[in-house]
Image 1 (cartoon, one colour):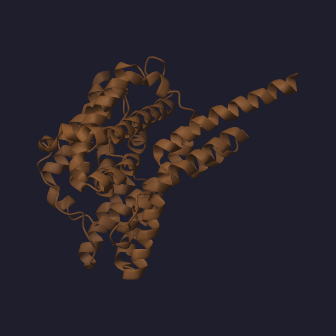
Image 2 (tube, one colour; image 1 turned 135 degrees about the vertical axis):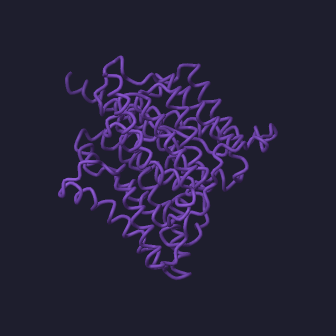
Image 3 (cartoon, helix red, strand yellow; image 1 turned 180 degrees about the vertical axis):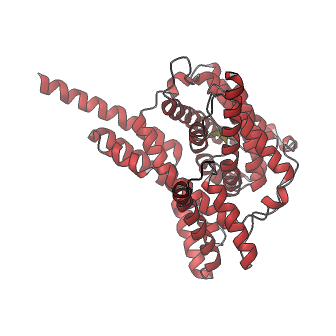
Length: 413
């Protein structure tokens, strides 16, 4: 009886996460420079494989904002055709991390670095949406700040597209207002605000006949073999980008799993097994990339939704992938009509949720050293890139720990 109740809870949680994951998968697929179909393929394939083979009971995997930040300059330099081999290499590297049992080391990343990394990612995700917000081509450059500046410059030059801005504004309004209205009128069944916003705005665009771009056709064939573009001659110049992707995959996935364990107050037996998690994530990235998707990681936002929705086991994450597959096969024509600007609105709202201003203020009120680590990690992540943000944050953490440790000894003497 208990197992049946858990299975029902996992099905409800998986359905909830799938509804949240759909617009995010489409959005991150577009933002990465690939396609909405690539994002959806990644969410389905990587989401299912990581759920089965990973080391966390609650982790939900798929395309993420952090990964799109890394992929954008790589795709700009090497083209989309490099992704299958790049993902294959990155997946193998993560599996090697697992074999070397590096998960235990990566899992000890200081919490202030995690917070700063999260803040930086939130700002980068928001900036990535500017082309969709203004309805213009992405600006030139290989850094988020430069690209964003050039995108705004293009929008001003070409003229502001007010209908696109209206779609973004309405999407954000619904996303933030709907939960309060639902609570006040006593709606007991939880429907994600992102889903309500996407459906409402899509209907509005059709009824009012607003002239905005849609996300385009979603092919019903999920998992198309892309291995024909694999070439060993690409290995030398793709090895370093693949290593960066692997490092991000490992760090973000283990950080996300740590967040989930903290949310459920997991016991020692229930906590994520870091090396098994690395194996699952590596395998997920490898398979998703050679079947039309892109490198994946554990997704903090979707994992949090999974926990809040009452997930009891890894079945919830597997259900989320299967429900996304059903949506792709049965509702592709409807999904293709979603306005691209609505996706941008959802991702901007998501970046705000990831940012979590209340939590950041609390973190900044701790020790001066922890606050400094958080701020510098966030700035480095935002202004340089994600990997350097983590490296700078960890280095600063140990430098300050050592400095304050020496000061404490002197004062005690």
